[in-house]
Length: 140
Image (cartoon, rainbow, N blue to C red; front, side, top):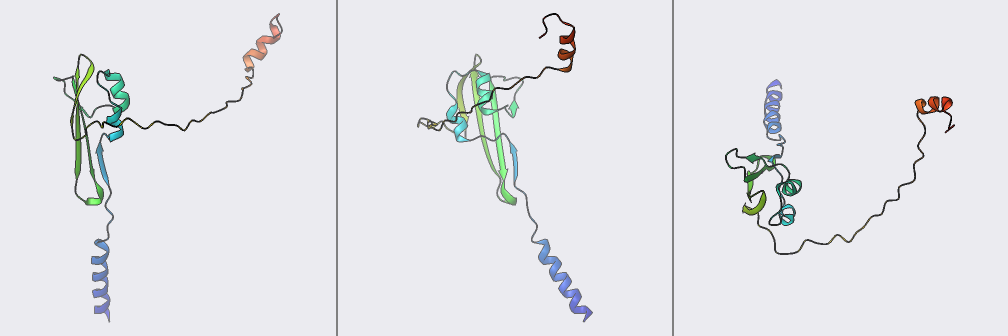
């Protein structure tokens, strides 16, 4: 009987080791087609940084080129890597090179508007204002 238990324990341990969960690994800057579609020629570096985020690699010797690299490996599967390089001329966006291309379609208009009503806030006097009000002539 103990030999059967040893066999079952070995079989169960082999079976359980094959059921290990593998994490999705994402590295670099996430770049989407929607981000690329927002870029326009002659944008300054500040505007591009607002849309794309800080570039992953900026070469000290080529400050007019920003590289964005994004790689993902889903659950131990095949690793996929996307790259885009932005080129500037005199601090303005001059070109794009890489795995993404700007689309010719206009961006969809956001027709959903939200109005927020902010109630008026009553500002209470601080302790110092209350104490100094006791000794002032205006009585406020």
